[in-house]
Length: 288
Image 1 (cartoon, rainbow, N blue to C red):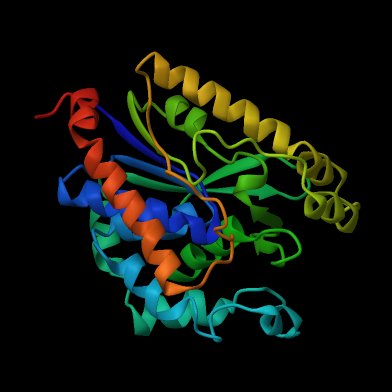
Image 2: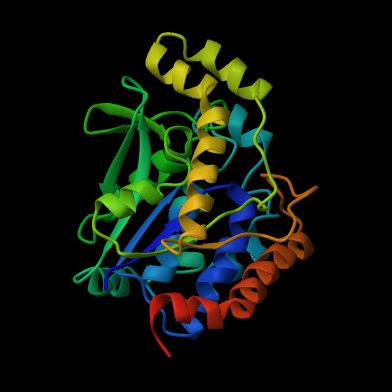
């Protein structure tokens, strides 16, 4: 059996996924293949390195910190992103809440971790393995996967500009199937009843990036593609081909939520939802 773990993005809403991943670690359910977009894969690396609780610790202690995110970082000409890139992607994993890169490297010898990014020229998704031997590229690849239009700047990877993978492939379960996963756990960051509507920010972004017409077109069709993907995912679930874990309710929970008590609630929802469904999940996986 090749087990895949698919992680939707969602910025602060991905605390739900963190709770799910910690519950999986409790049960020693380790995926052979982890693929995600934006915060999904950024947090997913701690699952790969087996660092239970790391994501919760950094979120509760630092997401409300002025050094982490805010408009002043977006207006800073040396940063030009809503998130303080150096603090969030360098200082925290390297010094403050250390990421165990050695464990990540060891655990990816027999598995793989994939970040989804969107090519600005083509408007299409690309799937790039997170390296275990190049920390700088590893971090910049995570930057690219998290780079939402307007809030972030595009990231240059080997001469090509990339942005948030969720724009082109928000729930990359098809890629997991194509890459040979015969059992797939998909973690969503929106409740099952959610339907994505056309977003004014995406229409604005499509005008900002008009010199990249393919990318702009992908932005404008994002809500339709997202809803289509969810419908297909739930059909696969009905046929027992995929196991889906989704939040109870994300109403009123902002993408840039930073209040520790709200973040903890979202994490707890993920952890408890996974635990509640653990027997059914193990049955799906064929384990006792």
